[in-house]
Length: 117
Length: 114
Image (cartoon, rainbow over all chains, first blue to last red; front, side, top):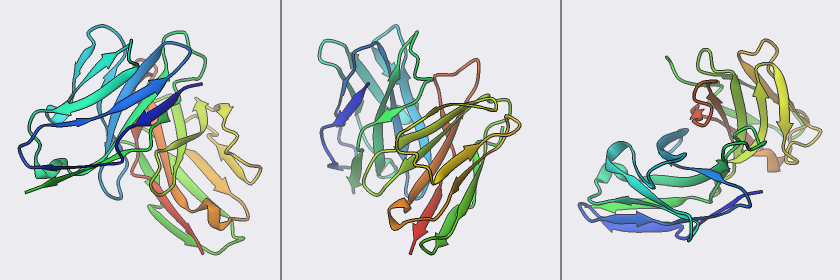
C-alpha cells in the first residue's frame, strides 16, 4: 500500500515569487508520481508526472517537480507564480511497473496555493 | 476528444433516497475509475473498470454502492438509501491502453444529502 503526505495544507505567496509545494510518499514497491491541480468546483487537471528516467520533470504552466528516491519526495516548484495559479494542488502516487493495483491513484490531502497581488 | 463528462454536475437529495450518476469517458479509453472527494481531502479510490469488467473495489464501497459499465463505454454509480455521510464530490477518470498511467478526470458530480 502507498501513502502520500503533503506537508503544507496552505501556502500563501505573493505574485512573481517562487513557490515550492512539498510532497512525501511511502511505498514498499516502485511508484509513479503525479501532481494534479484542482480549480474550484472543477475536476483535476494533470500538471506533470514521473514514470521513469530523468528525475526532474517539467509540466504545464511552468511547473516542475523533482523525484528524490532516497528522501521519498516529489516536491513541486515554480520560479514565478501568477494570480491564476491560485488553486488546490494534489500529489498522487500509483504502483510502478509490474504493479497489480491497476493504476489506481492514492492522493495526498492537498495544498491550497493562494497567490496575492 | 471532448474529455471525460459527468452528469449531473450537482445533485441534492434527501436522506434515504437513491441516486445515480453517469460518467462518459474519453472515447476509446478502456480503463475507468471512480473516486470520492470529501471537503478538505484528496480524492479516494472507489472502484475500477477495464472495459466492462469491474476489477477492483475499495472497502469504502459499501453494499449501498454499485457501479456498472455494461458495454465498456459509459459507467454509472448508484447509491441506495443515501446517508448524510455520502455527501461528497464523485469524480470519474479514464485512461487509455496506450497511456494507462495517465488518468484524465471529469468535472465531478457534487452530491448533497439533506
